[in-house]
Structure formats: C-alpha cells, structure tokens
Length: 413
Image (cartoon, rainbow, N blue to C red; front, side):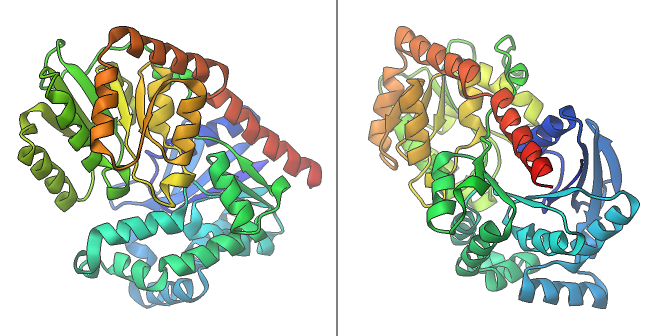
C-alpha cells in the first residue's frame, strides 16, 4: 500500500511518526509524509526511506489565496492547501490509505478520504483539546495576541470546538489509533467510537535505540559522585516541574550531593519561573537546565541519571496519555518516580519499576526520591522496568499492532 501521512508539525524530530513509518515500511508499504516546513528546510527529502514533502509554513496563509484558505479552514476545519497537496500526490502516485497525525488535520483527512475513496486512520497522539487548554492557560491572552497564528487558533479552535471535532473525527475515521488504554476508553466513552475501530499503539521504545551501554554527555555541570534526578521532555505547567523542584529541594536536605537535571525546552517565562522557584528554595546551583537536546542524545542523559521523574499534574490531558520518557527510562533500567495520574500509576504499579506519588505533592515526591537513594531498592526497580520493556512494553509489539491494523484494512478493501 502507498500510505500518505499528514503531520501538522515539522519532521523530524517527531519520534512517533518515525517509528510508525519505519514499521509500515518494514511490512512492505511505501510512505509519503506531508508535513509543515520551515524557511530553511527542503521541500522534498528522503529520511530513513520515508518520502518527506513539506508545505512551507510561511506560504500556507500568505496573500489573498492564503487568506481565503485560512478562512475556509477556520469555518470548516478542512484546510484547502493540505487537501490540494494530497490530491496532487495521489495524481502522481495513487494513495491507498491516509494516516493523519493529530487532531488539527483529521477533518481535512476525512474530507480527502471521501474524495479519493480511501480509508482514513486518525492517529491521536494525545488528548488534543485538553492539551490546547493547558497551553492556552500558560501563555495567556497577552502573549497569544502577539502571535497571529496562535490568536486564530485560540479564537477559532477553542477547546469546546476541538472537543466537537475530536468527537466527529473519531466517529467518521475508519480507524482511530491512540497511545494508552485510558485514552481508548475516552474515545469510546466520550466520543462514541466503535470498540473494533479504536486501537492502542503505545509510545513504547525501540530497544536498540536505548542501549544501556552508553556514557553520560560531556556537558554535565556535576561529577560522577552526584545523585542525579532527571526530567526529559517539554516544559509546560501540566508536566508538574514545579512539584519536581519542590520535591528535589526536600531530597537535598539529607542528600546534599543530589543534582537535578532538566532536559528540554519551554516557554521562556515559564522556564524563568522554574529557575526563580529553584533559587527561592536555595537549590539553584544544584539544578542544571540543558535546553533542547537531539533525540539521539537522550540515552546519554538517561545514562547520567540515578532516577527519572515523570511528575505530571493531574489534568484531563495527563490522565489520558503516556509519554515516551517513561518507557525510555524503563528500557535503560533507570528507576522512575511518577505521579498517580491513571496511565502512569497503572504501568508503574503493574511493572514495579518505581514509585508512585500523589500529583502535586512535593513532599511525597521528595520522600520517594530519598527512598531510591538506596542502591538495592533502586536496582530492583530498574531491573523490573527493563524486564517489563523486554517482555511487553516495546516497539516490536506495538509496531506489530500497527501492521495488523493495516492488514485489516487490506482485508476490508
């Protein structure tokens, strides 16, 4: 089959897209990815056997035609520019299935699927309406007003409308893919999805990419004697980084050699707030912010870690998603501390790969971190996590689930 994937963001670095495309290629499918492009990116590129075609972001809404496209997108949630690009691709190489990554282009994909009479797979990486709600709260109207695209998104695609688009998308797509059982339950319960059409393909890891035989990066500001707690991922409020800093401060009272490694990026004002919080607690010198790092370097930062934290706040978004970082730490035998949002608590409780604490409770998080300063306890959790990845939580299994889904489409076709 020739599978056309739509991604409203840039590629790379989306890891889920890369893994899914590679799994389908290994099954004999050809993949063309249409994604958003930047001013310095090539319009066409082949990456790991994936044909990547980019729509320049600066031209999507440029001029009178771009304005007209934007108005049509705002009113119908179907974007004419993406629709034209897919139709042109189909003219050159007929498309057998359309795989849409995330909610912003699902209605566009469904309209194209009806045009071309091909099946549409809605791959919902996260609870998008609730994620949008969290980001909008964090940015505030003042910042959003200075970003025209963000302003249009905030006004025209408010969370209530995104929820309606989510519901109709799940009902109309031929298949919906999501990342955990809790998200699947949401799409069945709240969106009216059919059980046989909603499948879980988790954000598990390719074990070869997270080999334990790697060393820490040279950029660390502390030595090998430190007890390192790490967080790797985006910096947003619902990630619970303030709680992590508070818990880490509790840890340092009896473990002065502890260091906190925060790997990732976020809104400048939010990061400044985290730095101010660390300073107010007297631990700023023990916290290192690395900024964004390449995905290929993530194993090295995990290798430097004694404990990996996933301190998510309890929100409708975090209650229906599991981030890559959990499986990455488990794959490398790093014990984890997570909050009791449903998917994290279920997986860590089932695998005994770490400790679960109440969301938003810095003191409890500090106590859990202190418990894992015991080498024997930490090693036990790490070993159980790695064993769980080897047996169950790995991309070999989830890639097979994705291939089986496409085999089912072939049978129906």
